[in-house]
Length: 232
Image (cartoon, rainbow, N blue to C red; front, side, top):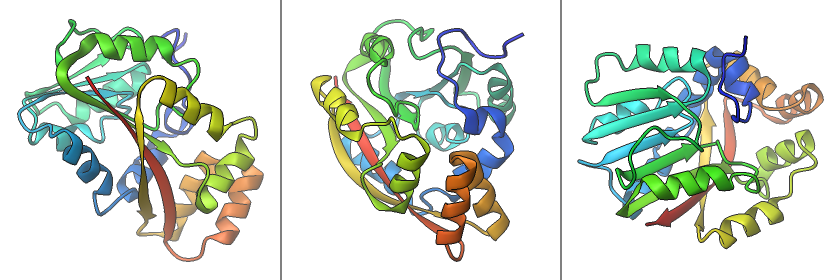
């Protein structure tokens, strides 16, 4: 029996290997550039925050440290259980098994929404973005963090793994939807070489992962991203 809701788009890296994806979460952006860029546009201190596609809830405790209320939505039931376990001591956090296109919240109830690596493909996401518009309060802001496939080795590896991906069509999609885009120069930093290699193997096809490992000395990977955002 499926352990995820109908209408969700599979995310093989975290769905199939959440323990390795946890290593990736720990490695990404040790300086906190993404959080700083988002909070400069719209702070979530004292706000109601929605994390769309929250996975195992990795980012929920940090959000909850300053937000008044944090809601995670995730379509994969096993990940929801892990997220609830992670956040069980946090009284201002709630986690729902739900999809982006059916968020279990009333209209105009969210100040800040964040989706990390959940909207790569743009076209087809219209139902989720319509639902996002429904739940956002006036004066709020939504953020989508995606890989920048036009820059660096990581972008090249992504393109080699998913050759049908069109960065131009995706960018045009977001522009038509009224979103703005800023570049983020992030990095991944690992404690062990084995962890770096394991992460590359869940992100790319086997042949591309072998190439990426061969091209990556040491314990760090440049990780260019895009911050897409919209005010409501």
